Image 1 (cartoon, one colour):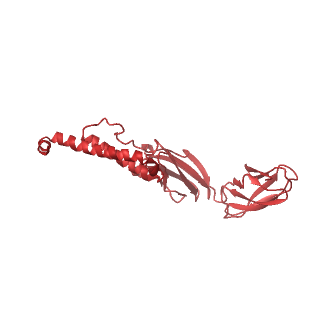
Image 2 (cartoon, one colour; image 1 turned 30 degrees about the vertical axis):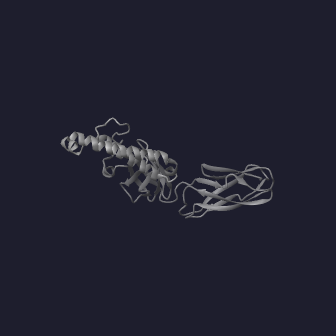
Length: 274
């Protein structure tokens, strides 16, 4: 048998490919039988299955079986969109931009990198992970100084220095405005929902989207049902802070709505008895 294989190179290739193919099939059968264990270990199972498919496809190629299912060239994945084409933030304001891929990531996930043409204007996550089989990753960006900055998100490292018109990765133009306080807005009013018995005092927290830089940010509080809540008329968030606490007393067992307002933003919470 050995002499026959050595005398026929084509037969030798088929023989080697068949051996590799058989080994890969054995690994895949074991993976199916142990799926419950591997799945509880997270990404390890995905990496093992991916490796098994690589062995399987290598064996198929050596054996001349190019038509084996799933043995195709990997699909090139790149960032298709990155936030809005253009947006505006204030100095000190943080926004979240979503980098969406052209196709779902494989079982190992995908690494998205972010580069800037003017790093002094904004601080941002330089990398973000797209989870396995997912399609998007969140990137936090905070404005530092007034001006315009272009951020590019990409998977292929070659996109970092690519011409914006080349279509390599995706870019967004961010305009940072304001040398003083950026526009204020309310992010949350917690707890929500709120529970307090009649006569009980509840500590609540109002949080802003932007940190005030020089002056107190004033939040107005209003109770929709008169006489059911005892709350301050306003809450002040000092410079350098994003949130402030205040106490509210639920006077009756009737549910009451408390609204926190600032400028064009408002958040309401219903305070009910247990």
